[in-house]
Image (cartoon, rainbow, N blue to C red; front, side, top):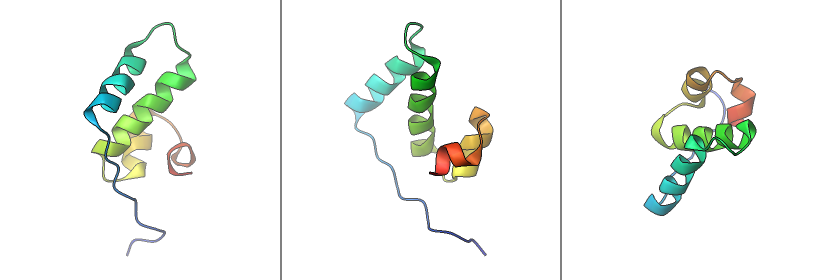
Length: 65
């Protein structure tokens, strides 16, 4: 049995997805900003925040809050 509130579906427009991908590839932006962009993109693809956290090597509270 799953506890907690269900994850809302995240849909990103193609323009915003392109912009987020550019951020993830940037070498001049901060690591924190590139990680945020990766998190947003991963949350669109993955059904679970735990999977996103594991895949990106961050804690579940970084993703779920």
